[in-house]
Length: 157
Ligand SMILES: [Zn+2]
Image (cartoon, rainbow, N blue to C red):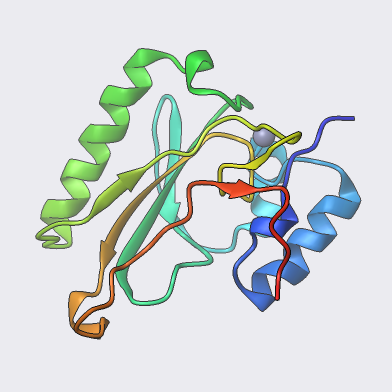
């Protein structure tokens, strides 16, 4: 049985409860047949390659956090149809206009490396983030951060 979620990478308590349930079910929360069970935000658009929505578990200090979920179960970028990249960029471009987003970040974590740790993804099914950090919410010397790697030797607390 392959692993679909990495609960160590869950950031929020409300998210952890749902993710523990998903882990117990041993299925993928981002596969189309399961998505509606766990994802409660409206779907903004169904593309050919992606389902677009707002992230249900946004980071702190963000103005927008959009989520694009690949419509078939793949975990590595090498499995992605390159045309999916064009659809992704086009949708995110449209949303920056619609939401008047002056800047931000795009992020796609991919793959896994359980012997050594993880790349920060809590769900291995390929998904993409577009995030506008809330610059006014940051302290003077605070950088807005997103985790892209963690050693398996890391212990919380
Ligand atoms: Zn999946």
